[in-house]
Length: 360
Length: 177
Image (cartoon, rainbow over all chains, first blue to last red; front, side):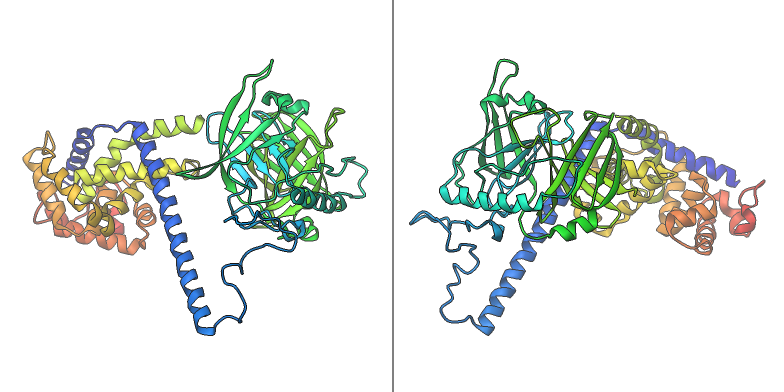
């Protein structure tokens, strides 16, 4: 008799299952997407609420214990210094013009940060506080190296020179495996900058030829409903057609949070990543020299040699040398981010972030 | 792309079956359909992880069941579900025996119903049910035993079980009860 019960139950379940229409798979995926959006909105709301609570608590503490006389609460958090060159009467305070203070915080409205192009073309754009720019190209290994080349004030230029000098010191390993010259550009981005500010990026390396680089690229900030985005304008040239792309920031970059010793302690060793992008290997030596190799997959097979030369809140930047004799001092850019555990790092290359695990 | 193909095949092959199972556990077809679809949406978000499990179908079933009995979710969807249920037609092809079975299943506790469906319909062993429900095997046995006893006066097939008889001939499961 229980066998009959099993049959009846099965018939009941079959009847129920058979009576529903199989929802379109696209509807399921759309639902998953909506769920992701809801989760992000919830997370944002929670973060905002925490921020508000922190602010209220801070205000309450201030009110309870009082502030030292003579301190202007409105200007207290400003990073401005003696070197600041704010426009008189401007509502936007000028940033510090001193590179050592890590003026270019990626959390503000500046260009600085790691940006992702969500459109079909895909790709990443990195803008560093010292004016170095990396732009990924479809199939490229490291990001194409570039520098901001126009629109800088005298103080910004001075800041960049100071940063370059610091980089130059940091990028002088006793390695014989690389011969990467130090950063020598005389311009940079120091945030915040006006929203209408436009930069030209003097790419000319052969690896980045797909961008129509000989005529330069321009970046502009757009504050849309979804937050700050950058638009990249690539002019057309004989071999390529121009295009415009939008980027959203996925990672903030700020200076001075990590030391060379701290970063190298975490990063020195051999690392491997195997993914749909192919097998990627990374070797980082004690002197900061780096070998980055890709084999097969969706990104070009290549070997890049470079040096860790700058350290930011998110990790270490690697500038790789040019494989052919070019006028530029560098050709590629990578960002290496230490992982939560000592056995993992995330490498932002031309194909985006990839997790590497320690193999040696 | 292989991930998508895997998911598509899995979804097409299993969706209706799991809706039937969740319906048997909850007695509400609209709720079952909605929670199963939500479970697939969640699976799609982490398909690489879910496909690595030994039995992705069990993952979907567990998530869908939890969703369907979630008090919070019920309170949020109560009005919608009520509208849906009010307009949804009766299941086609149900015999009077089936209607009696549906009615009987609704009268036992949710845990007992889940255990009975997993055992009699899905065909899981006691250990597998224990794993899927997160209960000790002894608790599963208890749910099954009490569920069958509760069903005995309502479903003639269980009359002898309610009196203490074995459930399934040819297996050693009767001894586990």
